[in-house]
Image (tube, rainbow, N blue to C red; front, side, top):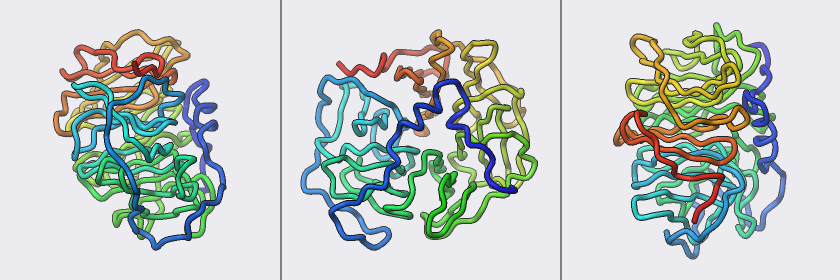
Length: 323
């Protein structure tokens, strides 16, 4: 691409304020810089019953393969929705951005808990123990990646770099070695005037897609070439299952939800609970241990989950309230 197109932060009314409000400061921390990929140890961490609270902001959601339950990355740390109720960590309540569930844990960026000795921004970090420790993979103390995607069972990690750092200029990049090296993504054929949320296929490292104000563009060659695969409408969130791409669009002041067949490229509209135009879908997640389990979050911190492939939906969270 010739330069970095305007970022969808992201592509709907009000959501840009949501993203801009997320911490992206340049605070210093109390620890000396460690070596890349060095785990950050913690003195106390346990998963416990979550206290009643209201989440101020949802920054992502997903189903890590090394645990059961829906992880919600919030301004107040990770909250876990399970059959036994809500859980949370006793510490390490970092504000994760770009939260991505993987087979062995999760990847994220963001800002640390104010009581932490970690630098901000976190750069690219990884946890394989439910958030008890973080492995610093890249750009620790340098960059915050609000737009981050990781293949569930692949090594593909995509980022949109919004600010120059020590290695990368502005643009879209791909790493397949845990952040040790990065290659620019060409995005040939991508003619939208904005960049948006990226989704990486769970098992095929060549497949990726991006939501934009002009629809969803997809690639079969790691973003080298892109093709518009939906109607040219504002799309706000997307996520792959093995066979489908789920995405949400705003059309004629309506919030709609679709299931697109990856082979036929046919999109079917799924019925979801009614959402006002000012409450669009912001994140979608698929449980890759059971592809019939899907969830989505909204701008006003509502979360819904389906366990039958989108036929029926149950309310997980309303207006961010955990009770």
